[in-house]
Length: 544
Image 1 (cartoon, helix red, strand yellow):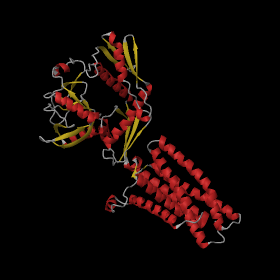
Image 2 (cartoon, one colour):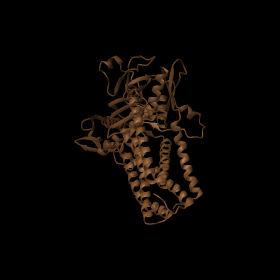
Image 3 (cartoon, helix red, strand yellow):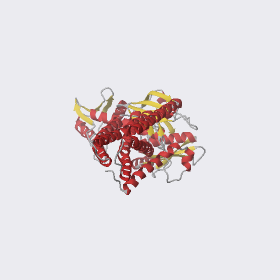
Image 4 (cartoon, one colour):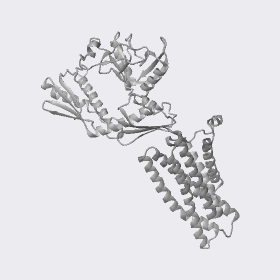
């Protein structure tokens, strides 16, 4: 029990040295870290919003609009499904009325010829046959199709509504993350809160208004054909044919053209864009936006440009035309560029929006605040004082209570702090004020195992056992109690991490890491020290 082979001893020492290597960069400046050799670790523990200061936003996700948008998209699909299709040997089915009731969330389809009712129902059922959440194993049908009083009603199931609402929150989190942290090198925290809220915390950024400006642009990109038969002046006066829209030009440098009348149904949508980047304009001054499509978008783009040479193809972003080029030739390479005499910043911001994708739902700011660095500095100082005072108090108590063995416990406690810092640095964790509280709590927990062991050794010594035998029995008999106590604490930390958010997760991470390292240092490292002393000196009596 007290004996360790040379390999085991080297492994224990090597693990502590490795933890020290990862912990040391936290005490160096950025210049000193950059000057370190490349093979040495340079990652550090990052300070959270409550320690460093920054911006905090609580955003609401309009999940109701997500459902409405899906139902309206279904209406467009139904119109397309009723058109003639020679390849499928289908004739046109004339629609008398197709409407969506936002209150009941039901699409009602009426036909001009009642004899087409059964064929139309079959087409709609085929259209809605696909399942939702199939990748997660659900695979339920998202829509119900019913026929009554000579009309077809399409409604979304409650399960599908909940799934799509939850999906909108998840997708919104990813889009927001790509917008405010495109390089992935900021320590931002974006977490869901409840069913339809998102918490955004950006340490080091004290301008929440600028953050909102980046987040709140919907980034909805689409490509539309123009309807040259409608006069924009008549359209502005309200004389707009069905499924047409009057779209203004964006207020960009070089723009300012008259609004254009476009077909509502997009020929290509932004979700088909694979990449987007900014570069200098190849044909003039300013900058341009380069983009590439995925296979689906490339096919649609090629087919449309091939069949509409000489027509205007409007590129719309967030309800504004950012470019309206005339198609000169078929574009079959699956890529294109948007010109409009953009400035460098305009082109970069627009490319970022296109690249990050459209927000699946509108976000509203429910709460915003800027946390100043002074509060963070005070928190760091208070947390550091608590850590130092607790550390010193535990060290003194252990030495006074257990003498030499208490000193071994103190050495293990120092190693425990080093390992915690090393693991948090390795993970690139963000340290918050609750995280500091978790470390302070871990200090007490780290010596708790040693107290159990040492008290058990005292009992064995009181029963007139030799020091070596007493130590072996003490470590052996105390193990089950140590394991039970720390496993339950570790499980509690896991539950907090799964169910909590923000600072609660920070506390859970430091607590979980501290539990693992404290068990290692308290049970293994002190046993190495105690075994080395007892087996080399073999004292006949031992004061403990």
